[in-house]
Amino acid sequence: MAAASQYTVPFFVSSLTESDTAVPLTRIQLGGNSEDVVSQEFRLQSFIMRNCRVLPIDQIERAFVGAIPVCMEMPTKSGFAIDNLLVTPTGDLILVECKLWRNYESRRKVVVQILEYAKEIATWSYADLEVCHQEGVVQAFAWG
Image (cartoon, rainbow, N blue to C red; front, top):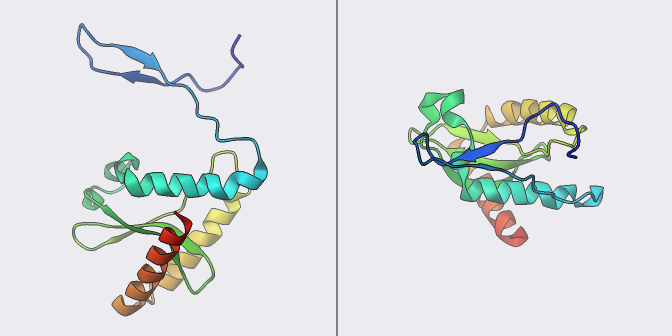
């Protein structure tokens, strides 16, 4: 018998026609080792860089639709690194902070990080962004 959960099992539905299929999705186990949290979050960042369309951007702000990934692990002067940086077709920046669902410490930490990002990025010039982007690109390739 499956473990009790407050959530239902998600299904992949191929279409809503007479020949449709519904396949239950299985949970991907990322491992139980707490020392592996950093590498698991890095894999999530890498996935978002390759597949940023999985982010519900159109549900958050329609003006951001069509965003493209720029870099990951972009360093900031505050010591935090922006997990993923995306840019919209009109040049707006989207900052993505990745946290694993089971990482309870992240709920407090992410709020602090977002406030730090906002405080710092509000003062950046284009040249500052370019320098941090280059450092982020180098860091991403070094880790990848």
